[in-house]
Length: 333
View 1 (cartoon, rainbow, N blue to C red):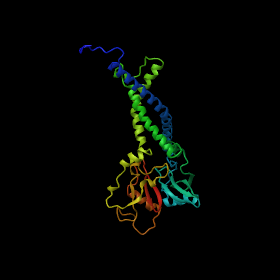
View 2 (cartoon, helix red, strand yellow):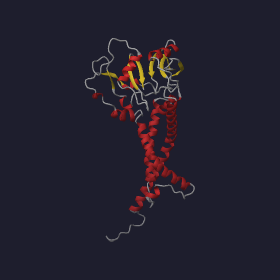
View 3 (cartoon, rainbow, N blue to C red):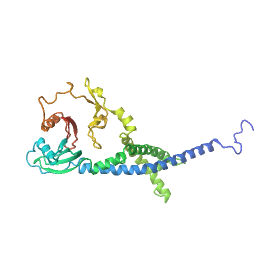
View 4 (cartoon, one colour):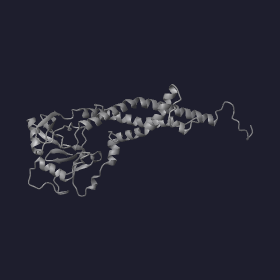
């Protein structure tokens, strides 16, 4: 064979044939990963979507703690202390632990009262101090859906399974985009829309590819934002790097507890970016002056002090602030 002969020997694969073989193997491998990832992820995505919608609608209609109970406004409201006394009296040996102020003029005040080792929520008419309803804390649909959404009702194991599903969701998207990518002479414009002229399996494949392309953008945001609350990726990496730095408070003694200790179960009053930040230590002279001595102070004075610190939200979209005072947790919208 001369040096100028470019014809390959019979029986030996050409570079073009080898490239096609490798491309085909990669395509089939991506298809398998896409298929098996979809089998694992799909049930979790359905669960997250359903429980998330339940939490959304329950909080909008009934409130996270069931606090959206309507009352009839009638003149001036009674003192918070009188309302708390009514709530505590309704459960005899209980004591008030948490106060949720009305979010509007026609809404009830809600107190958490611990009695006999059980936490109860008590709704009180702020105008008459009449007890309207009593129910067990964290026993509603919101908390039930939240526990499924976060842990599948099986604790850390459920959290890890959901986190694995979110990770495989990313694999699902990456392999899906590889399978969608135009090849074999197909133009990009044709790949961006389903082939409505196709029939049978070809039509459903085309619809799946184009629909998946557009859904992938929202799904990436959904998965990455959800991973921020996961036990490993969220708590150990994302939250740790995104936590508000305690060093922003100059010359403030810090306690051994973090802001996360102010949360209670599924209810997250403390912002996510503040949970791992240490709490300031009590009893120092740092910070703003509190209530003037001497004490003790009643609930009305403590709530008024909280409002003076701007612990309130806009009336159109009320938010809650958390303060610790006299061993009691108060939430002021």
